[in-house]
Image 1 (cartoon, rainbow, N blue to C red):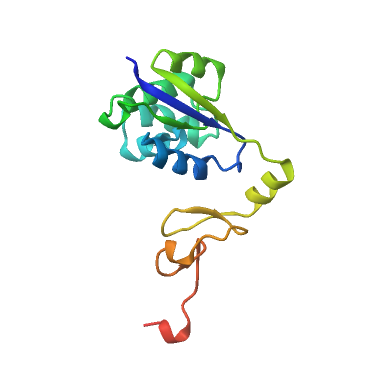
Image 2 (image 1 turned 60 degrees about the vertical axis):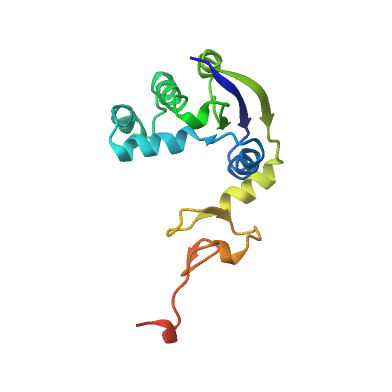
Length: 165
């Protein structure tokens, strides 16, 4: 199986892979793929691959390359993958990279480089909105209207007394 040309985006945690992959995906039309998201979805749906990965994930262990590659293989069969995918933080190992070569041609590899102190600042300031699931940093200046009602920059805000039922 070989589909269209894919792009790999990698960098350390907090480098902005998720943010940049969204921009790159909108420009190229290639769907963004995060193996972490795929694993969580497979576990949630109770697929065979999800069941295989669940015990590793629950114990804080790395999911074996074979399970990851099987997830990628399945993902590449979706119609939207015909022109390739944008891999966000994948591959992580040399065996994964070699296996990926058998599935899709990689046209670009983009490495995000960010200073260590900036990475620490981003990670320690990272928050997840409990309503929308959006990830953001306390130091970013995202537009407030982006978040659902009842949240402010990703944190639930208490209602004022006048807003309570």
